Amino acid sequence: MSGGALYLEHFGLGETPFSLTPDTSFFYAYRSHQEALDTLLVALRAGEGFIKVTGEVGLGKTLVCRKLLRSLGDPFVTAYIPNPHLSPGAMRQAIADELSVKLPTRATQNEVVRAITRRLLELATEGKQVVVILDEAQELPAATLEAVRLLTNLETEKRKLLQVVLFGQPELDRRLNERNIRQLKQRITFSYVLRPLDIDAMDEYIRHRLRIAGYRGAQLFDRAALRKIFVASRGTPRLVNILCHKAMMVAYGRGLDAIGRQEATPAIEDTEGAMRVRNWWPLAAGGALAGMLLGFVWYYHGGGWPLP
Figure 1: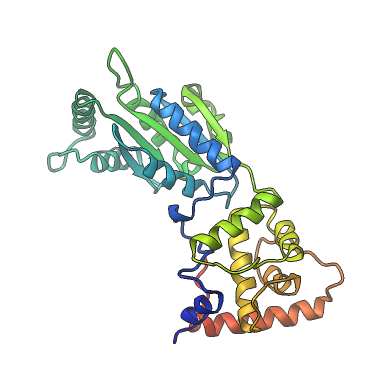
Figure 2: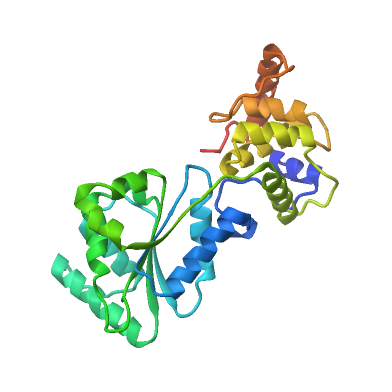
């Protein structure tokens, strides 16, 4: 039996509960995420041209983005662009591909724009609303942002032919203040800033992910472990996932069915970006347990740790 199967069987799980993959089946509608999703849906249904969602690294922007894509049914047609490092021409090509636009071989940029325009008019005639969703938008070159803005100029007498949602880190707001793209900032009619979990929301977030993964046992993380994980993660869902995953591996390695602060501590000590919490726990002991954790991770994954 593989290390992964042993881990899942030990806790009665059907799948790994704290994967970093943005799996919408694990979406937890805590207040900030749900408000962001509701804002997006209301704004898009109202036909707004530009909408922006920002948040620090690890707060779940991509998961909200994926949830939005799954929530937009008819009459929406979506073009999802996850790669921000695109030239204006490459961005137009990517949008054309997403909208199934047929282009002539070696089409010029003018031909690409005309073909996109024809396709948008066709979809509008069918009663469709087209939404382009740009992830990691803070990395988009200024010229590419301007090319996207120009595409949103396309409209009928009734409405825009193209709507755009920007997902990005806080640096996106600084980018939009640059003089050469200030016209785009004026187009943004709705915006939302994602916030971290508070400790009660984090507790329910952890329980939620465990339930989705198939856990049916008693409270797995005690209050002391939750407090340490909350302080160390500062309520950032990505860090919460990493710390819970590692703490569960420590508990499994010790044959335990519950996780306390003695299992949370080595997980924190072993994680880049986690705020170290040292009270009575001796530094030497923490280092030794971190070494034990790394040894177990090596065994568990057959010689490597897969988290980015």
